[in-house]
Image (tube, rainbow, N blue to C red; front, side, top):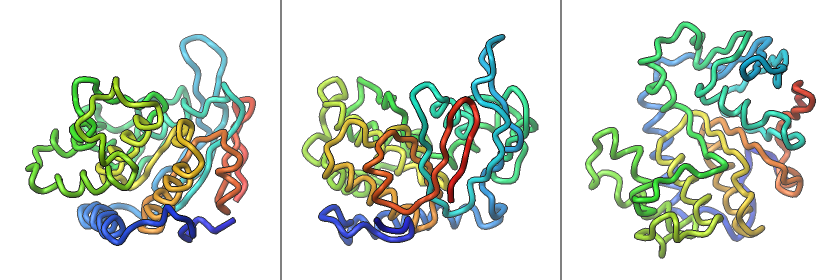
Length: 259
């Protein structure tokens, strides 16, 4: 087991090119946010969530996501892990309680400003959310393309990252042709290209074999070491046992945290 601040000594160790790429991505994000508030990046206080008139599925959640932190979010199926990730991504509003994102109370943020704030949070969805009419390369490059970036400024980075996650030979393939594991890796690469300050991942290793799971975990650890806060929702005990990291355990709507 290694500490979350260390790299995994595995065959999936980052190449020099990928390390430099990730350093550039993170440093670009930091240079754009010099005046942003410090820890915690995210603060929940007595947060509750229910859908419609149903019972609360999340109750009295109070916790912080500190800057540069690494944590696993776990719990039984149906415990509300995905709902909590959606709250962290600001795609859901809590029924009650306070959520501060980067120092701002989200209940006071105009709807028009939410998309800009979400750019600071990368997310890897369990169902991938890839666009079937775009190639693997185009899906990964999409966050930069929609911001009006010139392809010449990101093409090399996209290709290098796809190669590292094992999709170097699949750049021109459409998602319906990709396997579940390949779709997962494409979704992870896309989230990383968005230069997030916080990265959320919903079962990111659920469709890959153990060697690739270790490589992906190594990538998350490198991003964390470079300053990105990481939250990984997972059922994979073997994955969690590889890293000494904070554990957030959801059960019965309540959250217990073990540092």
